[in-house]
Length: 57
Image 1 (cartoon, rainbow, N blue to C red):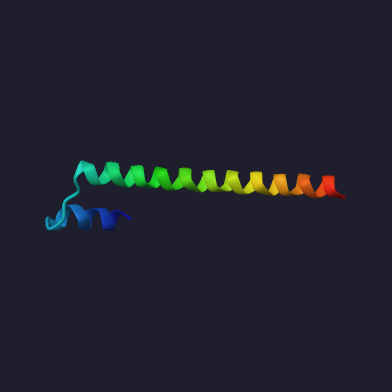
Image 2 (tube, helix red, strand yellow):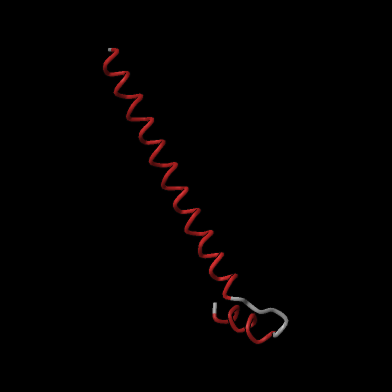
């Protein structure tokens, strides 16, 4: 890990802007939020389907 960090900063050919860090962080957070939202919707649909099946029996 330290070698990767050193190679990025010492090479001089590449630089990281604060925009890159912020947008990558924002994208990661949005991805995590989308995952949890889809999991919540999926579990809600399963619960609803199970309650309909128990009433129909």
